[in-house]
Image 1 (tube, rainbow, N blue to C red):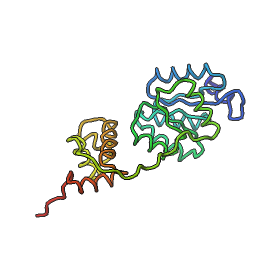
Image 2 (cartoon, rainbow, N blue to C red):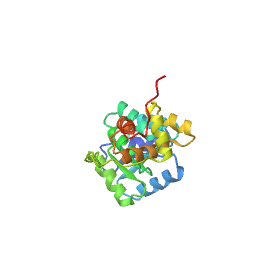
Image 3 (cartoon, rainbow, N blue to C red):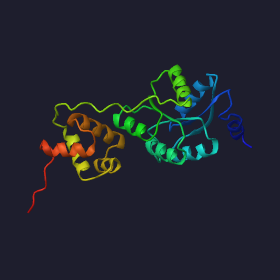
Image 4 (spheres, rainbow, N blue to C red):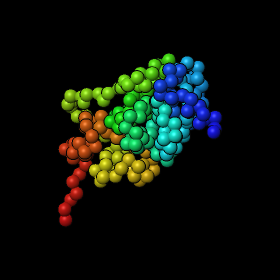
Length: 223
């Protein structure tokens, strides 16, 4: 039996000595830092660490941690998809997103997909410890904000945003748009967040509809 397995078995969900935590982040330095921070707080035990989505799901099966700290940006499978698959297999999984992404779309997708909270990596150590305890206790740290009241639509979009909106109209996914434009998927998400805010649109479909209304998008000319 490996020391990691022994540790995982020693700390179980009924053990009053600690909350069993799994770390999922593709930056080794970040994981080491988090593990050190949590080790300084009595009441936590880091039982597993993963650097991508598939590994995270496999490690969850092995260790069944109490709380998972999950980054949005991961290799092979992003954090949102990892969260969805994890919750599909383990509906009671308690996952706290810990990320650098300030994108509203990432936050909303995470909460809609079952995250118990969404924290930025700038969070203070004591706040992180408190958040983990609250999530372990069954709380949800954040809820989807109410949709804002309709406001005057503003614009225009930047040329880059107009190009992205054109691809959205054609039904391309974020990943496909990124490949077509030669930019990262994260940048595409940032453009979409800006488009939705500029057009006061609730979602991609409404953004396209408003794009036609404002003349940003043109209907195809019939021969």
